[in-house]
View 1 (cartoon, rainbow, N blue to C red):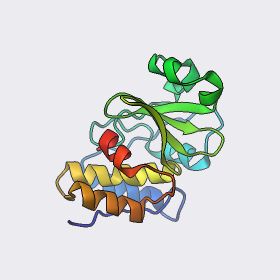
View 2: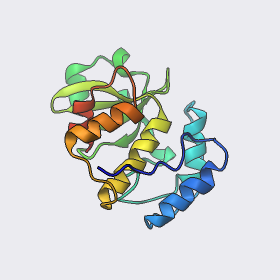
View 3: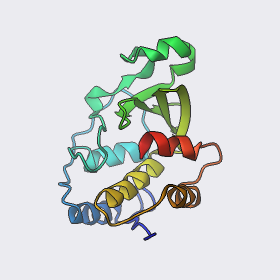
View 4: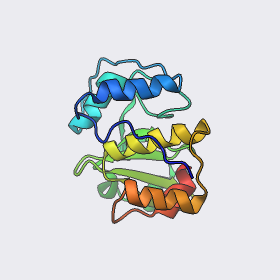
Length: 180
């Protein structure tokens, strides 16, 4: 296993924009800013990311990340499986801002800024990241895997994530199954 390069620890740290820009340019990801506007109260790190990197349109990095005008409350979304399992009051605090590789909703919990995933098979909801910073670091690792700079077997990857993208209430096996 080769260790991934993580150019930033968190959005907002000193020179984070330059560090992340340099990293992405190595992977031929064109950095584009975005005039950010949203009707939703979002965490500062998410707003900062979108202002500096929200214009990126890449199939290799942050794939399926919505532009702010596409954000939608989960309870108002088109996923029919949600109505089968979840009550409106169970999903009212979630904002869809991305989709998983299987096109399931990836959501921001507007109450605590954690990132959740709603799976259609099996029908399940789970927290997958503590915050947008963890999600970004995960995506930084994923582009390195995609380009062959980092190789993990499943066990190594889950151990790495537990060590570096740690949270006490994440089902790492399920996240691996649905996101990797």
